Each structure stands twice: as structure tokens, then as C-alpha cells.
Length: 230
Image (cartoon, rainbow, N blue to C red; front, side, top):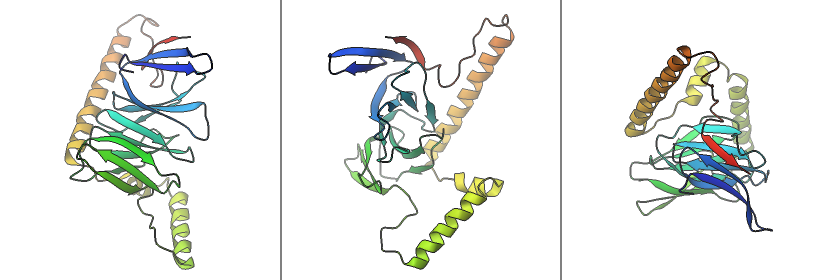
């Protein structure tokens, strides 16, 4: 809600069960279709938070890569991946157990993205932006929708096995992580990174010049929750 709260309601009694107040407002939530007690929250602070409804005082994971407010979020039908739409004019795909996106989609004409979702077959993604268009994307950018021969399938499986085997090597890791992003997104990301590093230095200096134990160290998964109420 706009009051920065995340409230869990019991529809049987028509009353709230739990309320958590976050640092900034949340724009959308999505429930994991395979694990009904897990949910994802798209927040104004550029991050996505995964919560367990049984413990809303701490996030299960924090997904960071967007450089502007996250407007919408959706779980894949398998519950293993998410897609997010952002005010920074990009769409990102995430694995739920990783902190950074595995892929980013953008075009020159696409403006701020307000809505996105997976198709029921998990093969495509729909997005809606304020340029008045709905776009269709592949959930796996390298996949093709045509009929594949046995040889083509075998080659794709072999390539995937090679990448998995040598994924720890620096050059393979660098190629796998590399993505072309719009100039304004890259620049905003650099500025945001410098701001985060500066804030961490300030916190560390404050802790260094304070009495031991006076300044508590908060983890990334806890510090955005300001208060909780049962």
C-alpha cells in the first residue's frame, strides 16, 4: 500500500493477521504458484523482496539490478523464476534463489513498463508499457519456436552441458553474465553503485568510531523491514 505496509489478511475472518512496514511503498505482489506460502514484492526502492508469509520480518532473498522503481512482478508457472517490469524501461528475468537477473529485455521505443506476466506454458512473457504497446517476449531468449530436428536438440543439449561444466571458469562466467543495456540504464547503475558504496563506507565509519555493540549491523534481508505487527 502507499503507507509502505505489507498486510496479510485472513479472508475467513475478514481481519488482518500480520502487518509489516517497509522503507518504501510496494507496487505489486505475486504469489508462488508452487509454494503458496511464498510471495514476491515489487518495491519503490528498485528491489524485489521474496518473503515467507509465516515470517514477514525478514526476506528470503533480495533481487537487485533495476535502477528505478519496480512496477510489476510475476512468478513463472514453475515457481522457479520471476519476471519484473520497471520504470527504468526494462524487463528483467530472475531465478528466485539468485540475487541478480539472468537476462534483461529492452527496446529503443519501449517506454516505462507498468505490467508484465508469464504465459501459462512458461514459454513467453507479456509486457505493457506507457507507449501504448503490448509486447511478447521469449522466456528463454535463445530458444526458437520452430520444429527442431533430433540433431538440433542434441546440439543444444550438448552446448548446455558444456556451459554447466565450465561455468566456474572466469572467461565463461564473464560471457554468461554480459548483457547489452541502454546507455541511460548503465549510467544510472554506475551512479547507484557509487551511492551504495558511499553509504556502506559511512555506516562502517560510524560503527568504527562508536562503542562496540552500540551500532547494530543489519543484513540486507532485514534492514528494509522497519516494523512488524501481529
